[in-house]
Image (cartoon, rainbow, N blue to C red):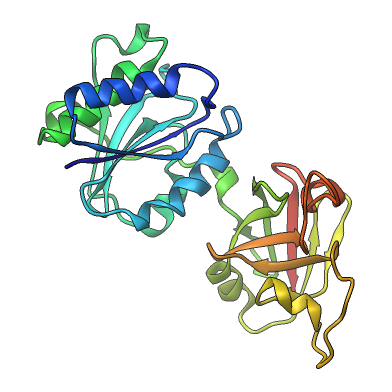
Length: 278
């Protein structure tokens, strides 16, 4: 039984997701189709990259991931399939795979070659599904594409340490349903750059200053004291989240009532973060 995951920015109102699933099941009736998300912000590559990076390790060898975000074919947005950690990823070469390439060596990488690519207006259905079915049936990747040397790297997913090594600069790449804002600085990257030095953190265009990085959300209740503080709902806090990326949150946030980090602190995709070491 094949496992095929779907990640798109199609939403659930239209027929697109249903058509994709129907096309897969008509060829692979015993396949297990898993919806990762269909609520990706339209054409948002960093958001897609973050989600894919933090979900694929929970799947087994042989899983096929169809990623339908910014998938229209053009000479700068070619279609690719890669094999990484014994799983397959089918998408456009638009930088989505950047996060994955940071940590894992690619086993195989091919540019897809199909006659209908350039005229397809629904490549996820007409190209990506076809490729997923071929892979699930045991087709070798070399039979459906040509080898390529490298994949596009999206600079927005990469935080950078300056030449002096005293400043780490990144940006917001993901905002979740609670308004928690995630930045492209991993805990490993932070600790390596920090090298046991002190630090100061400024986040966003409004220059919100982070004084403390907490270990978990409830640490804000004590704030290094033995007494539990009440009425801390709405307090801003920073931590490394479950994916080990730097995140600024509002304690017990709710975008429909009290707000979240994105609304209360003015964060949006691309908001800057600067960490100074001294």
